Length: 324
Figure 1 (tube, helix red, strand yellow):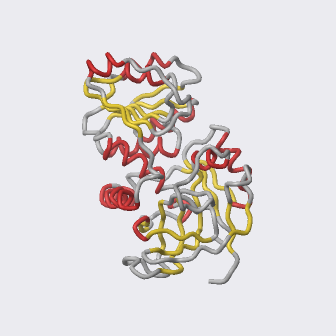
Figure 2 (cartoon, rainbow, N blue to C red):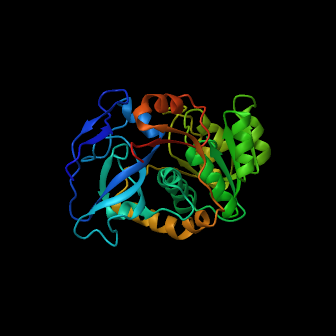
Figure 3 (cartoon, helix red, strand yellow):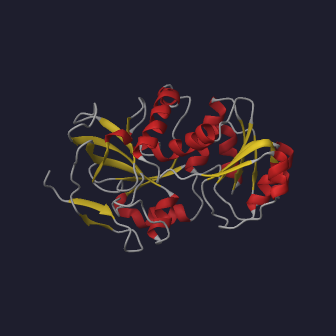
């Protein structure tokens, strides 16, 4: 395809829609004409120069997208031109075209629009990996979900509901708390209005999905049950926290860091295979639904990035591509 390709590159320090190199398809890869892309906090951090992508990854932003296969390379599995797909990416989704390994695709669930499908891959992969694959959440356990109103948060709340895990959320507004409760959370607090000590009444927690770090670490450990697991996926409250090893030892706690973006393609394929088997049927029948905050044209990307940075979002921010 010889048409010009446009995308949002990370180098400029601010999101600009600009001409980029045409991505070439290699063995085992497919090219997607992008319909919509999900905007994630990782994109904000990378744009600020604080989160470098994996070696060899495009500098075009975007960790997930939906679109149509327009070219399939040799050994690209069963994907065919014209097929509607959503993709989990290490980068490149915020462009008119993106090339990725064929193992990083899933079909779009029935009943999902292309725009809704752009919200699924990063959020549900992150939630599923950390709650159920690493965190080993089991029916009847209690989970504490930080940033419950985020894209990952609302995915995690719904997964907990469907798989019998009782969830408590920490959010930044009463509106977000009400939405999380409507999605199936049993309890939660508005951190801007309530003292986090109130979480004690909802514990002890078997699992903590933590994107905050900082001084939340010490507090989380005090809330956890014996043999509890803490999975850290970010440090919005700071890189450093106080760790009481006596508490870790006596409660037999596990603390684990997790990043999705830097996993191998083979490991991502394992996650997507599990997701397709366990979660896609629930989306197909409407038991789990995408939660969208706002949809922007990608040519209005500066407003979209500013909106996500405001921390006022509930669910996912989506960018739509021209002619989508």
